[in-house]
Picture 1 (cartoon, rainbow, N blue to C red):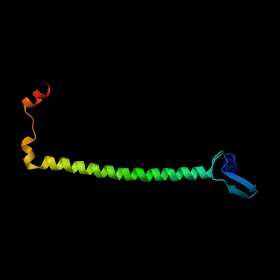
Picture 2: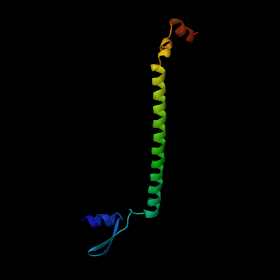
Picture 3: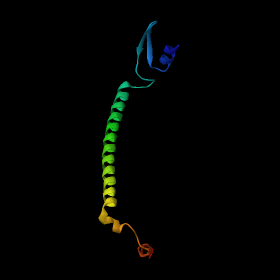
Picture 4: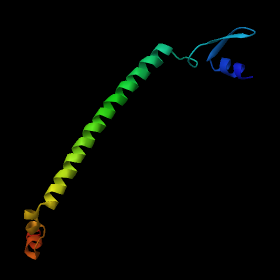
Amino acid sequence: DITNVLEGIGLIEKKSKNSIQWKGSGPGGNSRDISDRLTSLKNDLADLKEQELEIDKHKQWVQQSITNVTDEVTNTRLAFVTYEDICHCFQ
């Protein structure tokens, strides 16, 4: 029976034949510690979401900058390398 399993792992306590009490955690568990940990994890998640939004914003700026450079007509004359340019790199 499921109540025997739940009682065995410390999640409930039988008060009488048809009455049980939810204990809220497993053996050795402390619901205050679990609550504190959950709050901490939620705060960490919120911080990470904020960082992700900031990174996405910077990524968008970089992508736009690259687009601006590659689409600018005055930059097209500089969009190549010569044989001499490459050889110069290996000297």
